[in-house]
Image (tube, rainbow, N blue to C red; front, side, top):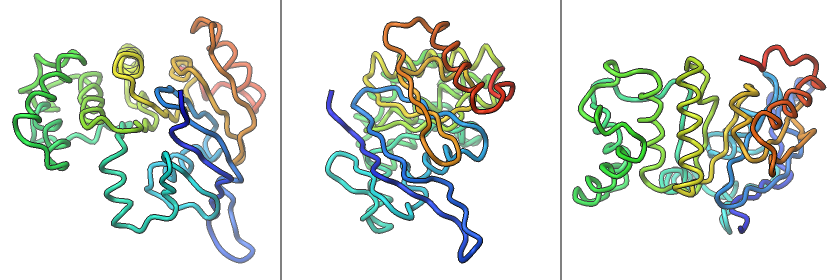
Length: 255
């Protein structure tokens, strides 16, 4: 597996003068191709700021972020917009689906923004609807389907252009536990069967236990890292809970 993304000594400050907040402080790590990486930490630990910088939504104060040989910290706004469109897929907590479009049309829209031909679009959308088990609801509108189905539609939309990286920001946050498990199963499927590289930010230990590796952030810095390896998910979950307990109580992390 080769390195796909490198985050090098990244810093993010907010404010000015004596009133500066260091949201992210000299963070470095790599993501290899096909990895399912989790980033955890309490509110204010810097995990969302880090995700926003990796997704080009926010700019670094210092440091570099490389996707392959491209340093995204050097790109101007137009180049960033193109980079985002061509390389990144997003899964948000609140689905971000358009209510006036059907499930299928929501996915087609993601492809049409890339200027893909209709024949190619139809074939790819068909394929992804079937793989993610939402083929039978393709003509329904978001308000006619469950939260879990909406989130699978959001996964399909994120995947359909075969991005280099899928960024999932608290993807289970708005779901009940059954829907959350379905979504996490879908992410595993995307990662293992479709070889998608996934970076998931979460504060929920149960969700994190589906990842293969987890970085823990505290006060804007990485303070721990664990790899699942051969452990089963229950063992890995207990290991996660042990580390979260070190950060000052784990009650906010457990569903």
